Length: 120
Image 1 (cartoon, one colour):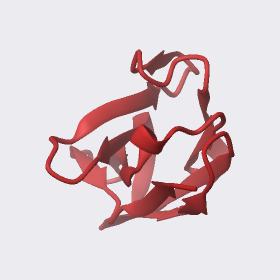
Image 2: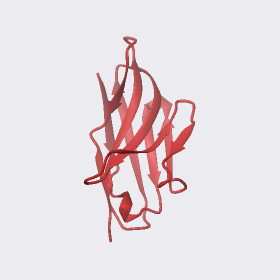
Image 3: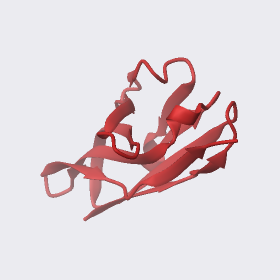
Image 4: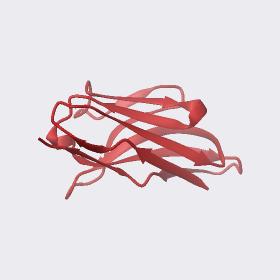
């Protein structure tokens, strides 16, 4: 089995910064892409950013230039550095990973989510 555990969420004032982390563990052979999604109350879950094992990245227009995604392949961990936070960034943030197991099977796994609240 595979587990993804997020950390680093919390309450921050507008203009502030937070750094989210997501560590994957289990019978992991490799992880291709890892990403961050978010879901605000009453809205659909949306992609924030993703990064491939080779380091290629993609960002939602709404966070481009403010958020930075990175990963440590040796630790199976993905990070999201969030700067210049806005109230509209308030949401539950979820990480995911496209994981290949030692058994040879592949699947997408999700974390449980971490709350980010941007408010004065």
